[in-house]
Length: 210
Image 1 (cartoon, rainbow, N blue to C red):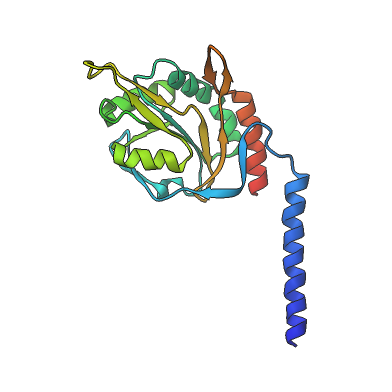
Image 2: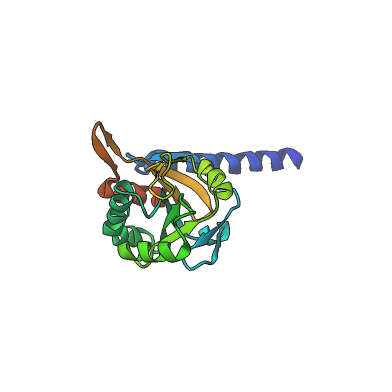
């Protein structure tokens, strides 16, 4: 009886393994994103949104979340990326209606919830802006595979810039990191996200997750 049970379990495990392998090899794979076959866990966190409400890992559940580091005083990469996300937002939601865009401000001193609310609404009123103090932001960014650094010139308390990753991190509905989309890089050219490639790979990633 035990031998028969072992055989049945082995057959079932083999069938499941074959199905997973077949799914991964037959379905189109993302071409432009760094796609994680084995997802990476997002550790618990607590940020504050632009409505001054707590935003935790629970708000990632059952949604595809696009996370971007930035700040309202950013002169180039941030507004360019947010505008591109606004352009393709309807396309992303057509792939999965449970899609959210999250701007995480890495400049908590200047970026109050009120300022973030005004800023994010300029691009899209459905987008969510988040922040926290650096003690929370640094480990959160590091967990996502991103980084930032304050670049403050001497004698200027308000005119500083923040160097930060320009990539987009895609978190799946289980709250794990599914992929990272890096911007186009060229010497002397502003790093930018390619919206068409973003949408194309997102469709493939969602299909692979079904």
